[in-house]
Amino acid sequence: MKRFYKAVTVAVENGGFRVMLDGRPLRTVGGRAQLVPSAPLAEALAAEWSGQGETLDPAAFVLRDLTDYAIDVVLPGKAAVADELLPYAETDTLCYRAEPDEALGMRQRAVWEPLLSAAEERWQVRFVRVAGIMHRPQPPETLARLREELAQIDAFTLAALRNTAALAASLVLGLQALEPGADIDTLWDAANLEEDWQAQLWGKDAEALERRARRHAAFAAAARFAALARS
Image (cartoon, rainbow, N blue to C red; front, top):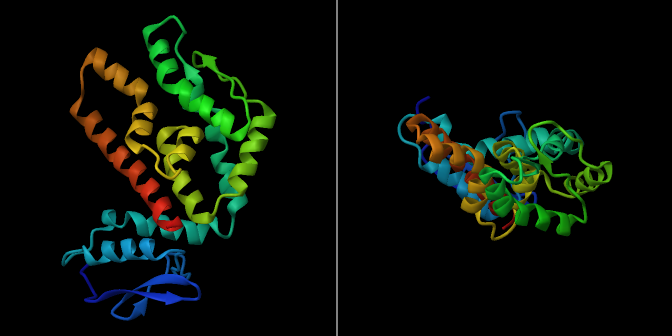
């Protein structure tokens, strides 16, 4: 699509902020007013539009897509989105490990245990650690407590969590990535520990490295989106 606007501005409207293209307010893909809760997020959305060339690049609208999802999907149905996220705790990557006496298992314990223990302390829950790939259910009280946590999260943060949890295959890492001051690179390395381990053993593949970089960028972008929304 050809660029159809010249001026990109931000306006204050109904207690929120809205991007304007040539004075016309933007709407979401679902037709709702694209109102965001913070000026920094609105400015970042405006920057996506300002940074376009003569032809619009849909892949460059990462923050816009997250915003539309928050407004069109999460706001009308937070409970349903929470239901979609909870399975990432039931099969959390941090809980499934190699045998304890294997080199990979030792590495997983060294990297993952501090992160999982911190989550247990913060939310006052207990996660079951599993040696191998056979599924073992997490305690019902753990899942109930995490559901309470998800219910307290605002729509824009939940939209970001949908991406961070899915990319990390971990609700724990997904939530930790959205905390103020989170070390995104360290958390992403933790999520990719097994993949990186295999690459060290058998060599690095160019396509796998490119895929890892794209997913890392998406993980970081979702965390940035949440930070901008609460600014």
